[in-house]
Image (tube, rainbow, N blue to C red; front, side, top):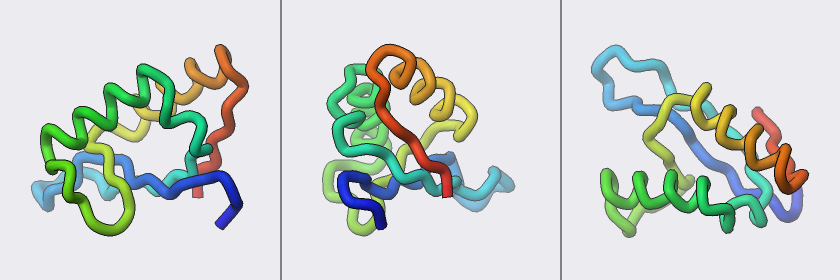
Length: 82
């Protein structure tokens, strides 16, 4: 894994026919952005603060990409989809 990045699983999942989660490597500094903080709060509301393993964000992967693109255009942060 690249230094300065954290893996994030993005997707609703749940086994009800929803698409599988998409794995992203997100630059650590991006997590301080207010938009990203809102997504992290959504994750905490749905799954609690005691998540184990890879950080999961329960939103549509395309929406997540749009959020990151908006943040990048403002701050030049980096996203790598793997």
